[in-house]
Length: 311
Ligand code: PMV
Image (tube, rainbow, N blue to C red; front, side, top):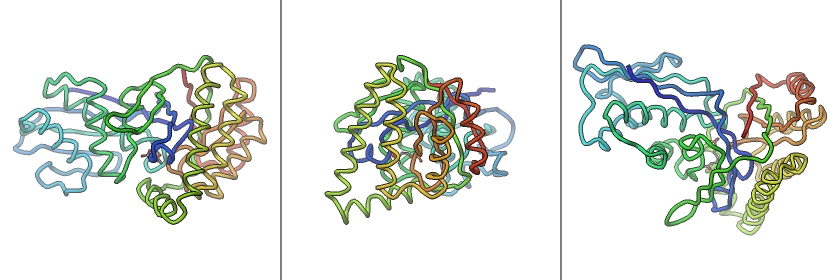
């Protein structure tokens, strides 16, 4: 039996703008993980199982849009040989889906690692990330590549989408970040939100370019504040980033309500994380204020909370 796991992620600064070449910062959420298990059994088929979703199929019968099958086929291509009959690939995940926490990329990375082991391939984290990007493209259309990068590297990253190669710099904050992640309970498809932002950008280029520039500046300032250990500044910049995401129309009444509740309860800052229009909010807290922020978020209607430390 071979097992591999991969973490979820949050975007600290710069979602959406990152698709348009602006810098962004993301961090893994190591406590929330996707898991892939490969086992050998009998039978002529390669089986794909997602017990959490109550789904099972075979590689031969899987539809073209089945991400698990696409990942298995990608790994067959990479290895230059088919998976052996009787193999069973099972995936499970504690990361909420369609919630901005990178569940799709985490499942892809876990499956790539497990099947890579099965084929006895030596895969660098760069290659794992590049393979996961191919799967992200099925989910998203035009992903920036930040999700697969932060999840495959499992370290905080400063990321710029650019040619010929993305700029990827891992970093450690000078002081650890304590995040409370609050789920609105509303699922939101990244592809739809990213597509909608593109249509708005096409209709109002100057305004959206200015918003993206502002997000890029906030990501740079956030990076400097993290390097200086100035958590109060990081929090303020998160608030400003949220305001830019509101301008982009990717926030929602639920997200704004949770952000207001987190700040009122003493959070240093709060913003939506990921594509938006649902999904999760992140609030930066200090040790003494954490319990009050958690209480405030639950009282404001958060469906559930997760805790994550960065650095
Ligand atoms: O997949 P999500 O919801 O975590 O969003 C990813 C971040 C975006 O910037 C909105 C899209 C992208 O490809 O970078």
